[in-house]
Amino acid sequence: MTAHPSFIVEDQSATTAFLEARLAPQKRIDTHGAIVFLTSERAYKMKRAVKFPYMDFSTVAIRRAMCAAEVEINARLAPEIYLGVAPIRKAPDGTLALGEVGQPADDAVDWLVVMRRFDEDGLLDRMATRGALTPEMMAALGARVATYHNALPPLAGFAGPEDYRRSVAADIHQLREQGGRLDRETTEALAVQLPGALEPFTDLVARRAAAGAVRRCHGDLHLRNIVLIDGLPVPFDAIEFSERIASIDVLYDLAFTLMDLCDRGLRPLANRLLNEWLWRIAELPDAPHEAALALLPHFLSRRATVRAFVEASGAALAGKVSEEARDYQRLALAFLQPAPPRLLAIGGLSGSGKTTQALRRAPEIGRTPGAVVVRSDVERKRRAGLALEDRMPAGGYTAQGSAEVYAAMLARAESVLRAGQSVVLDAVFARPDERAMAEALAARVDVPFDGIWLDVPKEVAMTRVAQRKGDASDATPAVVERQFAYDLGSITWRRE
Image: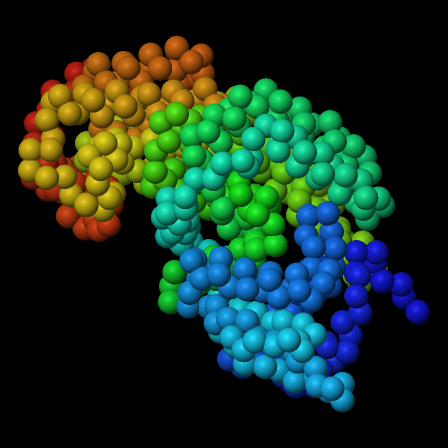
């Protein structure tokens, strides 16, 4: 007889057998923390009777509370999926019955989260496997996650420096507890490098917590917990079992998705997601998100580390060793390797393809997941308090306003560079002094600089701007006509 892993604290085999017979599921999904039964229209999720240092489902009462919490928390992100909680009841004669959603039950032996079933082929991890994810999906996901983060209230008492130290120590303990299920040498390397990547930035951690960056987030935002519904990515299955684990820096929340994309060799999509989120996340003047990018290597590494021991624990249920878990270990180490930042500036008149080029080149520059694209069009809208898709009001474009936008754009870029992340500047840069300011920024921060000027026929530029939809740029064919009359001065940047 095979012994159960020590983290399983109760035998649920009778309940599981009942659900198999009662629901006749088309499919069953087993994870380290749950069993999900899929019927033609519904998904029924029963929490496993397990107890980990980071997750406790050890009693029926706890599992009932956690089912209710899961529905409440996830309804904010995915109301189209979550229906409620239903009891599994036990009659005096010992027979089991499935109760209705919302039904109270003192005789319940367990509880289920009840959801509408969705097309599993729409799960983003599956779409990634078959190469179906697109930059447009990542842009939509970045916008949705930023909107979600912006609506969450800041929390006090979580994610301070000591909390980070304790969490890192707990992660290392979890790695070591897996023993030979993971690569021991890599575990010990992470035991040194994870704390080492944190300590230089504990003051930044404290500033982020004080500034309101810590919120009750999704907490488990990997690709398997995001599904495409009606063409839009919908995150679901947010963490309900631990206020501490889910009360995190909003950038750490996003880092799970970024890590997962990079693990699958999809760094360009991770870059697109990060940039869209940065363009839309609300400003925190006392601890800017751009400065927080100094923590991103640590965040990415921790996310991979967590996946390593979670995957190893899941494999242990089947008495196996997971090579995928060891791959996550190696990825966690790779995120911590240094890559010096660079500055690339792309200029050109409206319609020359600056943003297209910036987004294409950004993933290739600097450390994971590539460069931050700092756009003058985005800066202008944010300074005006407008959504990126809204047009500036009449008179919104002035010489003074343009100078202020360029100054703010360069200040944002400097914050990113000093955080160790590379930058692509995306602006017209029609004036020699504007181009000189970009070059001076690189010299001041002491990073390599490249400047590219995009040439394009006027007719092509006018056609492009006329066809734009849902973009931060307000350029029109009339604007292009005026710009082609500019005196650009001497352009020393590489012309393409």
